[in-house]
Image (cartoon, rainbow, N blue to C red; front, side, top):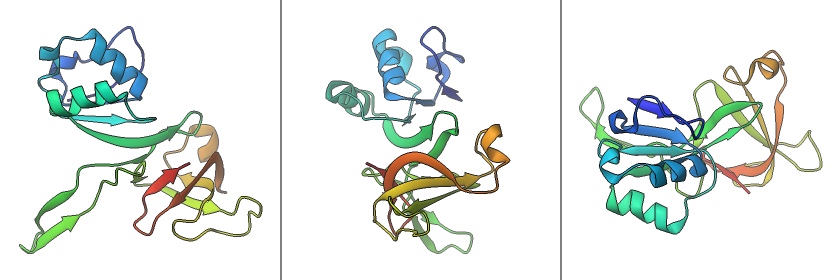
Length: 173
């Protein structure tokens, strides 16, 4: 079970039944401070949607509790989650051939969710689209955007600055 943590007063389902927690770092740090360590036994993943954890909580979550932390990004008023890092995968494909998929880049906030597109536009000229690793204004388009924005057929300016690398990972500066 997963939980998206959205306030400091309640959590549903209870944390001891969750294997994944999705929330911003402040919310997860508050959970860590308010729940005893044995409550975290089933938690395997945390997907956080803003800045990094304080060093002591990062160490406790990853080393003491053995939880994998993945960064993502959302934007209030547009979509709660736009990009996400997930675990890398190594296994066999349907034909039995070795398959490696890079799904995580710690220096980024991940790749866009399915149904969303990102492009980076020159900071001073909206007609120029930037190439891989070039910094500019981040524009979004897709079916997962908020209801007021979803009906607009054009790209939406996220009001964020960043770049997309050649593998599709977004970095916000």
